Structure formats: structure tokens, C-alpha cells
Image 1 (tube, rainbow, N blue to C red):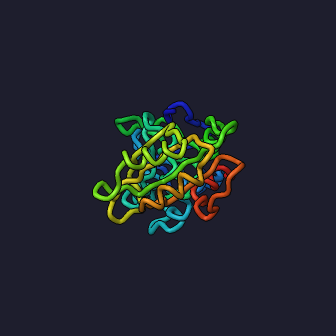
Image 2: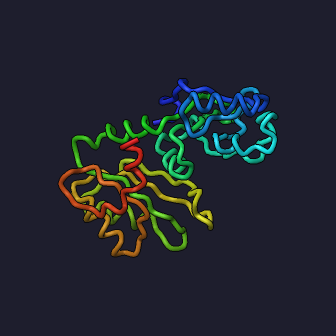
Image 3: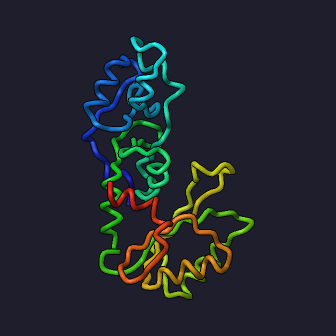
Length: 222
């Protein structure tokens, strides 16, 4: 499922040449935490109301904040679920989406990602998503896959993404699993010293540590 398929065009953008005051007004009217800032059609970054309010020259243009803009965005050809870490890291409810050349295409809404998660084949069967900080010298994908299969699990989607919060820049393995034994899979992986950072259970018949659910719950309850 590509991000391109789920683009929203309901929110405005800002220009580097817009005034700080205009930016504040548009952000307030949009009721969003941030909006995309463009130079022509190219995405430069995201600006928040707080950034604008703290500008050294409030009568100037947004261009003065160019170096302070945040850079949370997704490419249109990326998988929809690759947006989850960026939503978590930024706290935004919309993210700008670009093409491979960095040109703005539209926004991706967190509530849309939540809707897709809820209706992605897990409403009629058990399963879940797990996040594993992946170290190539420590972890083995083949071992992880074998343990999942031994517990009657089926990997229906896998993604390897960069974790923006990891100080070492380690990637994060995201696995979407169809199974009726989700808690058994989690326990089996942990017994083999595979660290699970986050987990979310889509089924209703098993009990899993709810302390792991903080990431995806915010998208299921936007």
C-alpha cells in the first residue's frame, strides 16, 4: 500500500516568502500542529506555530526560519506503514508527502493510517505488529521468521526502516503477523533474546502486555 494512494489535499501549505504573521494565521485556521513549507513546488520542511511565534523578526518572512524547520516527510512510493515512526517522532497528525525529486504531492493523515490498520485483514482474524530494533551482528531475520512460523504465525508484511530516535542510527524491523498465538510469538522471541520495542495485538482472545501498545494506540485513537 503506497502512501500515494492515500494523499489528502484538504490542508494548506506555506511558502518561504510568506510573512510570519500570515503563517501564524494559516496555521491557526488549519488547526494543525505544523504545515509544509515550500519553495515553489519543492518541500523545504515543516513549520509549527511555536517556531513562528518565537521568530527573532516577527515582521519578517518564513525564510528566516529555513535552518530551524523540521524534516518529517514521506515519499509517495513508500509503504503507508513506513509513516508510523515519523508520526511518533514528530507528534504531528499530518505529514507532507513528496515525489522522489522532493516535490510536494499532498499530506498523509494519521487518522487515515489508523483506518487502514484497522481494516487491513485483521478485523476477522488475530494478529499484530511488532517493532524490533535490529542489529545485524546480534539479530537474525531467519531465526525470527522461524520462531514465528513455529508458533503458527505468518509474516504478511515486513519493513526495515531507520529509527529517528536511535542515537546509533540502528534500523528497526517492523513485522506484521497473522496468527492466533500472538502472545506466544512475543514470548518465544524474547526467550531467544530478541528485543521487542513495541507490539500491538489486533486480536481479542489473548492478553499481551499493554505497556507495549503506546505507539500504535495513538493512531487507532487519533
